Image (cartoon, rainbow, N blue to C red; front, side, top):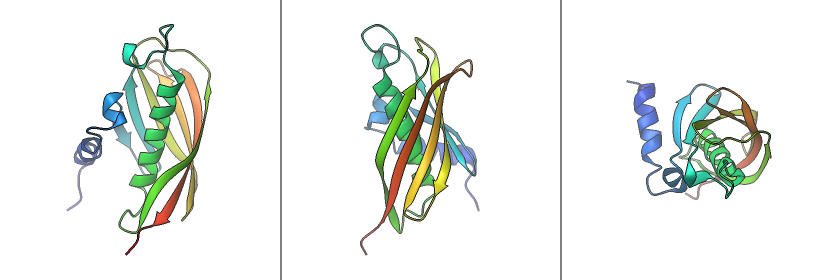
Length: 141
């Protein structure tokens, strides 16, 4: 019997307890065969001093969704996944609402993965474009 999408989302989000994702209120909201989407509220907890979304919070959102995508699409009984590099280009400011990060694979290799992450706001405006590299390393037996 396969697990429902809603049950899988609940399972995924449950592992975020006591992590940066919980602190920033990041939650995984959707996934499919080749993508994963997370959302984060934009409020004073993620502002920079002038009252707009902090680029570091955006990068944390992007790395979280990209890393989760690598985990979700890997055999974690055999490998563990770590991020190796992230880049972020911030294009527009946000002061309220939510931001959504959609991770899709540009390269899904056995050892290395390259993930494109597009961050948008509630009105589907492009806020940031990020790239995350991850590596899958063998688990010790």
